[in-house]
Amino acid sequence: MAVINRKAQRVRRHIRIRKKVSGTAERPRFCVSVTTNHIYCQFIDDVNGRTLASTSSLDAKFKAENARPNMAGAALLGKLAAEAAKAVNVTEVVFDRSGYKYHGRVKAIAEAARENGLKF
Image 1: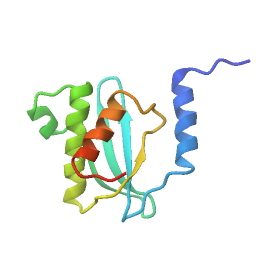
Image 2: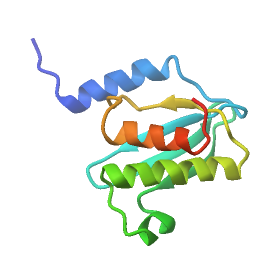
Image 3: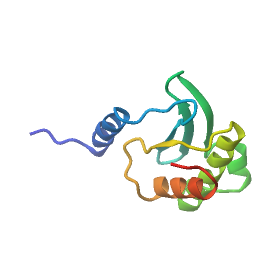
Image 4: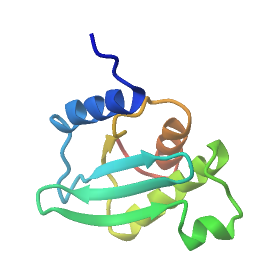
């Protein structure tokens, strides 16, 4: 029996989730990706294949706060993501955690985005 590593397990979960989760122009997919050094958030319209808005820990607004991609930084990024969504008139989204567990930084991003006006 082959041993499957954590990355392969996450990719399998991501594929399984993406079969069910899809974004539209009215309700885009809020995709969160977490790496060891950075966090990325995108609002994606899957019907037209367009990214409506995005933010990450590499953005100038994030760096201006002297934040790091930890729990506090994830909460700040959730707030920045909600502001970016409001700028393109997005209020309702479908949350795509990209196979990551709803825990830690992913959870912090989601809760901060909800507190700042996004509806999941």
